[in-house]
Length: 74
Image 1 (cartoon, rainbow, N blue to C red):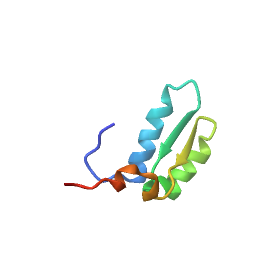
Image 2: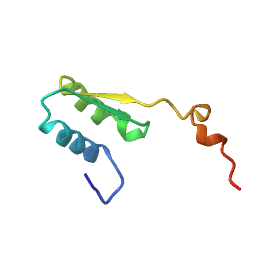
Image 3: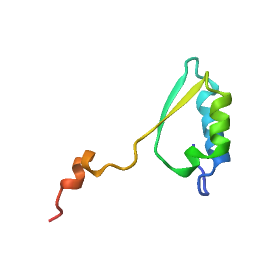
Image 4: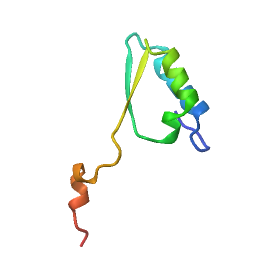
């Protein structure tokens, strides 16, 4: 899905609707900690559709778990 403006709750919910529309199984979606992913409307929508979709949030940014952080540019 492509969109031209900044991501907001309405756009994200539209994406989630499209994601589950033709799925015969529960969708397990991993998302980052963007504020939109934690917004009230999104949480309400997820709760109303919990039999079809579940969100898993990545942890807050842990640089020690990203090996690229230790690379040195030359």
